[in-house]
Length: 226
Length: 226
Image (cartoon, rainbow over all chains, first blue to last red; front, side):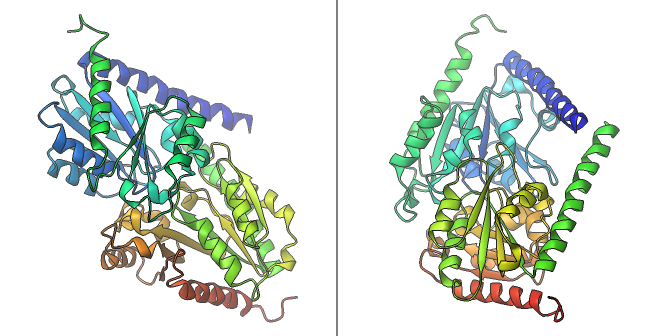
């Protein structure tokens, strides 16, 4: 039993080491990296599609897609105009830093402003695996229920932003915005919540603004960077 | 690296050994055990609530609830009239056989007809951990999208039944029943799909009938069992 615990630790450390290398590589290239996590079907891919279309003139963007199987999501994102590389994890329940490192071969990071990583649809495991990202975003959606932050607190605690999607279904699903906000801020008091409907476009301006600010924050502190 | 692989195997084998013990214990007690899996917020707990109310006269039922945190779900199920024991996994992304074995101390299995186990909301990891159950059910929901079977094939391949919940939101979410059925049966040709809305009650009779038949199938082959 003690042996197993020791080994788990070593595995995490190996991912952390690789993630630190990736973080360094992102910084040297000057590319903002955003890691998107959510339950299956919360709308990560749809969010990338609308972002690809809305910010195409402002930023040079690309994506990495994580899924157990199929390249459906990558094809959707590419169709929306954003280059995208698919990772299939087989049975794997999260992306790890080694998979992301390999997928990066598809890109010249120096030619990008923003790289989005769409993690495997899973509100548990991806939270424990650093991919070297600058920002973590949890995408939640109203049909999942307003109690998800308290049921899956780790993902929310480690997030830098929450996108609450499918606002158009809030009434039909008896979703309480007030309860959701209370749960989120009970876990992390200053966590920004972007309330949107990718379907109607409602609230998306707030999400785009969050992306712009994250990009500016990255660019600001390294004025002498080459 | 080879060491890690060997150890992973040993861990799975330990769970399998415990699961086989549990399966034997369920059979000796003559209790049907159903393991429910789904994405977060697909409606497992709501399904247990309506089942508790609808079948209270027919069966002696109890439940075990798996969640990372809170005992919210157990309280809801108890409120609906079904005894329920909560397991909190901390960060754990699935229930394992040891956790279920410990939770069983709350019950005299011989006094039960059906035990439901509600797994952690996660469409990936729970599929890999046998809990000794007789039946596995994947609860899917229309807002997650009709493509979930192909994106998370393992859970569907190992299931004995699929409950498609939130039928009342199918139109609002552009969900194609035909596509969903095609994807499910492409993975497992004879997998029963129970299409329901726990909110409106639509289709629930089919789910209750599935439960009755599973219970009958268990009772039938052991006529001399005491």
